[in-house]
Structures are given as C-alpha cells and as structure tokens.
Image: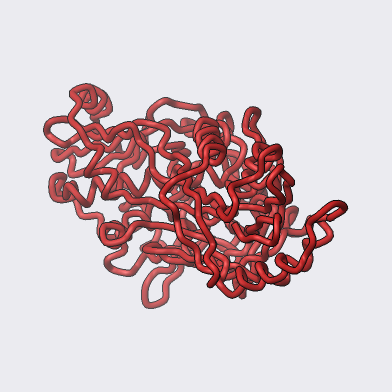
Length: 462
C-alpha cells in the first residue's frame, strides 16, 4: 500500500455496468447488411451506476433507475407456455437458433424475447453433438424470466440472470483471439495518481484526533481517475460490461462500500479492523474460472461442465516509489480468507446481484465456445454456424458505451498498524487453458446425451 507515515492507502475506482437491455428499439433492419440492435444507445442502469456517452462513470440518479426499470417492464413480457416452468434440462439447437435469426433478418422483423434470452437458460451444463441431425445442442437448467426491481432480467424462481444471445455471439466470435490472450479486465490507477496521493499522505499527521473521512475529497482529487483496461473481447460489447460490473461489485463488497447481500460474508475492511494490513502492501483480488472438470464421452460427442465456475484469487502488491505496482506472488492470510469466503458464497451472490450471475454465464459461454472450436465440433456435426460466428457480417452484435475512466472512492479502517483504505482487483477468463487442462473422459455423460437425443421442429425444447 501507499504510505503516509502510518497511513496506508489505495483508492478503488467506482465503475459501472450498463447491463439493462432496453428493448424499445429492438429490431433487425436492412442497410448494406442486417443490423442487430438493442436499446437506446446502450445507456442504462444496473446496480445503481451508469455510464455516459463519453465513457465517464457516475452514480445513477433515482430518475435513471426508475427510467430503465420502466422501459424494461414496458418492453419485456414474461414468457408463457412451456417456457414458464423451471426445468432441469432445456435444450437449445444452435443450427435451429441460427435459422431463426436468418428468418428474422430475411423478414425484417424483431428478434423475439425467447431468442434474446436463450429460452430462459440459467447455465450451460452440457454440449451435445448430433452428426445425424447436423446439429450442436446446448443444454442446462432453465425457467421463465421476470424484470426485477434492479432493472435486470432474471429467472422468476432462482433470481439468477438468464443467458443472453449477444454474450453467446461474442463468445463464439472471440475463441481464436482468446487462444492467444486471455479475456480480462482490470481497473488500474495511473502511476501519476499514485505519486500524487503518496505525496499528499506524507504531509499529513495521522496521530491522535486525525479524521480520515475529512481527507476523502483531497485524496480523490490527488488520486484522479482510474483507467479501465480490457483485453481480447470488444470493449463496447455487453460481455465487457459484465466483466467490469462484476469486478466493481466484488471490490465494493471487499472495501465495505456496500453491505453484503448474503450472510456470512463480511468485508475485508471489517476483517482487518483490529490488525490493519502489512506495511507497504495492498491486496489485489480477481475472479477466474473454476470448474471441477470438463467431462466428455469417449467419442467426444457429449460434454459436461461441472463445478461452481468461478473462484476469487488474491495476491499482495507493493507500490514502488515511481507509482508502479508489482505483485509479490503471495497473499496475506486475511485477504486469502476473504477470497475463500467470497468463493464459498458465490452461488448465493448470483441470486442477489446480477453482475455475478452474468459473469458466470459469460464464463460458461466462453468454455463452450472453446470446446466447439478446439474440437472442431462444427465439422463433426457437419453444420455451419457462420452467422452466429459473425463471418458474413450480417449479424453484428450491439454496441454498448465503452467504459474509460472511473472516479475514485474511499473506504477507511484504522487498525493497530495505521489506516487502511481500499483494494484493487480484476477478472480473467482463460478458456483454452481450462479446456486443455481439465477435460477428462467420463462414461456417465453419454447417458444424458442419449436421453436428450431427438428431433425437434423448434429451436429449443425441454
């Protein structure tokens, strides 16, 4: 951490996510190619934050929140019929899904909500390849959806966010890029900001009577905006918003800037209240893929994802005199304990905060896209998914506002070794590494494959 006598600090940038799919302008229209667009310029509210057209993140006003919720409820109807009940296994045919999108383009009509929300799928647990039917099928638990008070579309029973078509398209279209470089997001202070803050703190007497909160405005001004850095995926994609949102929410929970929505998960700041942190260091947390295994049948026609899907990782960092940061390759015990608690509570968090459920959905999709690409399952099934993969350019994914800068936010704890302020973090998805290292044969997967087999005229079925 940065030191000012006994004052150790870092400042976390506040950031956003624009995750509400506002559907008034949802349509497929023809120019040179069909356009696939959702929403009002992709500016919305989720979790109390929003991002302006210039990339500036700010707190959402009450008007912002109520406006987004009203628009969603006006344009997103609850499903009917067989889409309504919760089921353990709902199948989605990728070839028929693509055909449905091709018809929408040809007929110049809107994409229906069941397509946008992938028939209410909650997670992808299976990938099945049926060469006789020239098809690849995704399967997992599903249920009907509702628009929740936080302006998110979630399962009516579970409260977890439904999978979204545009995230699946992004995953299928970035598999080759993710083989070269992992998908990631980080929110980083500038070295110049670190130096300014360090200078400010070195001039302050933090002895008896010191009021840390009174320094907050000066600290923010000195530290300045932090930078959002994304790799591999388009910065203006919904998937990018999801990564940033989850990172932001994790750090707010760690820093005690918002109350934990689940019992048994105190903030890191509460955990170190009596001890403080190690002199000169700060914790960094990030979320990464965590699957028990990627199981497959001997003939590689059936695949199963097992495990929670996500875990929190941590490492201590030191801030050099130049303002740069360097990882130490080890974590302090309290930071590791908080990461373990966060991982243990992740399933519960998914039902209360859309950002976490969305992130797990995105990880599932990237693993599935890598299985399909890495094992050339399109060739095995003799089906061409070029429209979904974006090869002909006739189905571009929607463009969201790109996050660029984030205003700093402070949280204060005084321990027996001085004052501590905030932490940092990120998200990393390395699907090729997961699939290559965790895949293993398991005969039980073929039994589910055979049970799910069967021709259906619709693109989804139970």
